[in-house]
Length: 221
Ligand code: IYR
Image (tube, rainbow, N blue to C red; front, top):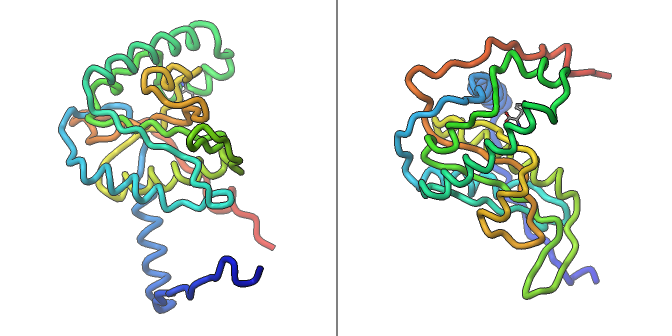
């Protein structure tokens, strides 16, 4: 049993404590400049960057290392239009009745409504699917902590997109089952989030928001 799955040495690349402080500070400052962007330019993005950010997301830890995610990349104008149409249809019903007054009030500062032009304007849409179970040659196998795993991968994807000098938005059209049909995904895959990726429009604006301070988010014993 001991030798069935032998481990290999971990090649730790040590940096000095000073470097560690500098890098953690700089990384925080860079990440703190990230904003969710709803106004995109149609400027093209080299596909290599999209591949790199998805490779980065694919390095996320996952339950039993099952890597329960699929990243569908859409640049086809025809498919983007289909997605916009279907998303706006659902979003319209949501904004005009499904969402509570409290929810709509909470969203007011963000300035969102049912219209989602960015779904056609951004050069790329990345639709992340979580795999509820594995499916290989018609045989199902178990996946674990699927939401946690996919959520971590999306966090890393968003960080990678920001690091690459691009912008994105965590968009969750609701309900989002239509994505499985349009993108012809198998039964084990459930749409998780949709990220338009690209450059911001020249006149892009963002809501005037503050982030919670460290004292509000951290408790120390
Ligand atoms: N899915 C809708 C509504 C929405 C919900 C939340 I919570 C947000 O933070 C933002 C939007 C939409 O995309 O407009």
